[in-house]
Image (tube, rainbow, N blue to C red; front, top):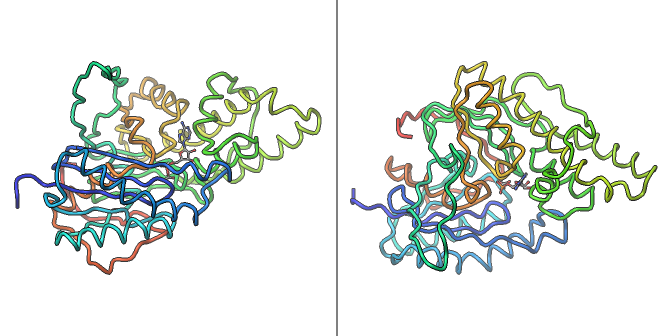
Length: 366
Ligand code: KG4
């Protein structure tokens, strides 16, 4: 095997077209084109997402290779998100990756998007070079960006998933519990839409919540056995509460949006953390990570820090830039699969729905 492995990674599962280049496990570039076209619809419109991926994929890949300072002929393999996600979006990335790899005569590596989110904790970035125009960012708060030791638990919370994953190795992950209906991010986005706020709702609710009282209002919490989650009841409870309040005061949302956002965020974080505490109790594993778009949420991050203090957990919080969809996380999985020579055939189809395979792999690192 050659000394330097260069992986081009492509992510197109939802509404971000992203490409990254890694040299071994070190990230050289990570370029993402986010699709603003969905904002006015209050949610991702699959057909528009596919079209936007078509427009962005070539320039995004070109830019990623350019920023990495390599030529495409130096690439060792092309890794791509095979699923889960929106089929039309996935097809753009999957077929581009296949064509690109074929034209260069290099292997293709299929990556599970969810596995990618978990593996975002293992992205190693080059230290930024100091420049006069761009000052270095302040150091991350404690724990951010540090890879967890194996085994660890990972709360994976995004727009499409809410799961508690037991990670034994990069290719040996077990879902201990997951949502039986909506994902946490989906619930936040829908509640934000009902309030007439923009899309995606997560960052807006997060910002408003900082100025509100989390105990101002109460919304129904689910009673689901075991480690599974449910968020559809909360969504309904939120909608009915809003309707009632608006009947009494048509401007209720405008007058109380900070308190509503803070109470909604508090309830969602409480639901997430209760099951996570149970998972820690059942497994005895106190190394606990969080991943996925919702892990950018300040309330959830604070709850992690609080649990570290109260229950002696060691927590792992990804850098903000690696919380939402990005190709860097796909590249990390791609690199480890490359080392294991786990390539995929040209006829490997995209999967819109796929969970973790309960793998049997036992690579120790990671
Ligand atoms: O991981 P991601 O980019 O895409 C999926 O794979 O689903 O996650 C997107 C989700 C959206 O629901 C978005 O509202 C949510 O992550 N999100 C947040 C925040 N930033 C993004 N939710 C709460 N607080 C945030 N700061």
